[in-house]
Image: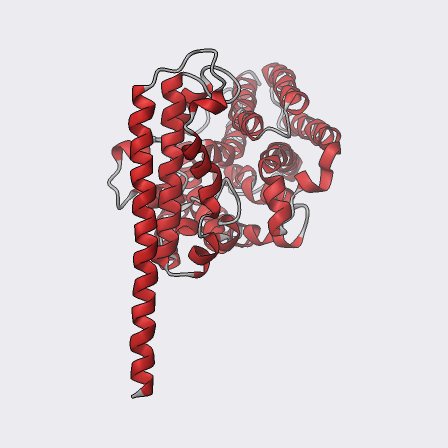
Length: 414
C-alpha cells in the first residue's frame, strides 16, 4: 500500500511538472506569434542597426532560450528535449524572417536573406515530415561532404583509364552512388556516437538524434539500410576491390572516436575519406600500382588536413568546453603555417602521382590553378568567423573539380 501511494504521488508530480512546462511553452509561442505580426507590420529603415531590427524579447529568446530549463530538459524525458529544441527552432526561424523583412543581416545587406534560404532547405520543402529527419541525418541537404568523398575516387578512376581514352562512366556512377551512401552512413555513425556532445555544441545541437527527432534505435536501423545498399554497390566490383572496400569500414566506424583520443582526428578523417583513391584504381585495374596510388592517396590526406582544419575552427570554442580535440585547437594561431605546409605536400604528391601515371601537360597546368585556389583558402580565411570558415570549406569542391579536369585532359593527351 505505501508503495502504491508513492507511485501515485510520483505520477501526479510528474504530470504537474509537464503541465507547467507546457504552459511556459504556450506563453513563449504566443509571444513569438505577437512579434511575428509586429515584424511584418513594421518597416525598418536602412539606418537602423541590424541588431535592433529583431524585437528585444525575440533576441532574448534566441540568445537565452537555449539555456531555458536546459538542465531539466537534458536530464528529463524525450518529450522535454523535443520541446526545448522545437521552441529554440521557432525562435531562430522568427529571427531569420525578421532579418529578411529588414533586408539585412550580419555582415552586409544580403546576409539576412541568405540565412532565410539556408534555414529552409529542399528537405523541408519537398520531403514528407517522417522522412525529413533521416534525410538530415544523412546530410542530404549538405552535398559538400559527398563531393569531398567522391573526388579522390574520380581522380583515381580517371588516372587508371587507358591513355587517350575517357574514364569508365559506369564505374564513376557506381562510385558516385557509393560515396553518397557511405557519407550518409558515416554521418549516422558520427551522430549516434556523438549525440551527448552534439547537444552542447551550437552548430550541432539541432541534429536529428541530438534533438530527439530520431531515437538512437531508428538511427541504427537507418545505418543498416545504408550499409546494405552500399554492399549492393560493392559486390558489383571485382573481388580485389570488394576486399579493399570492406576493409575501409574499420576506419569509417572508428573515426568518430578519434576526437576524444587525439588532436589529429582530421588526419584520421583523411585516411578514411580518401580510401577511394585506392579503390578507384583497383576497380579498373584489379590491383594497385603503389607508384601512382600511394602519392595520390597521400595528396588526399593532406588536402583533408587543410579543409577539415578550416572546418574545425568553427567549433573550437565549443570543443574546448566539451573537451574534444582537433587540429584547429592543436595549431591555434599557427594554423596558416601548418595549412600552408599541408597544401604544399598535397600539390607535390599530386605532381608525383601524375608523373608516375604519365599524364600530359594539362594536368600540370591544373596544378597551378589548384595551388592558387588552395592558397586563397589558407591565406584569406578568417578563423574567428564561422561563416567564413564554412565558405572556404565549401569552396573545396572547386579544388576537386580543377584536379579532375587536369587529370582528364592529361590522360586524353598522354
